[in-house]
Length: 408
Image (cartoon, rainbow, N blue to C red):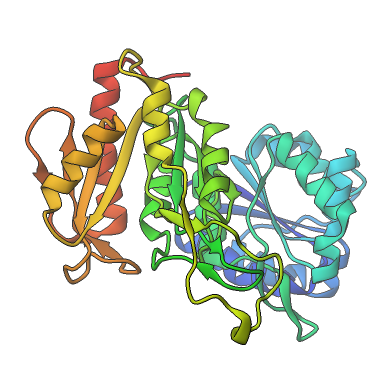
């Protein structure tokens, strides 16, 4: 996908600057043409000669250096690039871009750009969580700048926390998403739920399940690859936020329901791939209850049935959004799944027997049967979850064509 694509790689003066060498190598191995632009402080950590050897192109640092051609450097780079990537991006660079400053070659190139700009922050954990930095990041996000990371891990100071540069594979995926040509879902909004929910018993204990979110994330990532505007509503998982989409983090089933209800009306498709808890403690304690004082019986209350609520609100006379649910069962798979489809007013339901090897929670594979409101069930073989997502999206796109173009 990156073969022949033109990328400007901006490197700033964070300690993670050395990681940009490996990132550059990966981009070149995938066939990309890469022009490196460094800040002056970045050259104190990695020499321009290193990046020149890896990129095969002269590295630009000084905005006032004599150009090789009559073109103005930052303007020509901005016009040449199909995407600009800043990795690592310091708090200083993020602040300058948010303020509209252009006082060096990199910030001037970004200011002159009309292509997508992907920013991969890396910094001290306290700097990253500083309200000023977070305000700058949010302002840039609202303007269409794309962020990937940072991740939580061991930082240069030895402490563990947020601020670590995202892994190269994650950054490359963000670049691919930014370069994605219009696909069959272009112009359509997709909402996907993923992962479990946690229903508190007290301040530290909760009821949950074994869902990891892998299937829902695969649906969201496949939709983004096909050009959709994706909103991923994610319960507590260990998965990093996928690039190229808006991720809403929630904890309880009630929070997930609220988030979905705020997004669904402008969507062409809603996929309920999450496993929200069906019940929650009716009277959770605000503090941790000592073991010897814990009740031996807990009264439970039902949680919102998100997909059923969407089916009720959409009604039978409204074609969109398409509603796609999942049925994780242990017996009478097809009967239980079809009953859920009809009861909730869904268009499709994906039934899987979680007792089958490779088809349960936490696996990288899945085996589902696609059941539509009309027609015979279509079983799929055991496949990687990404391939399952691709095949299901083909089915969904076919339904969109039947219902109308799905653009909102």
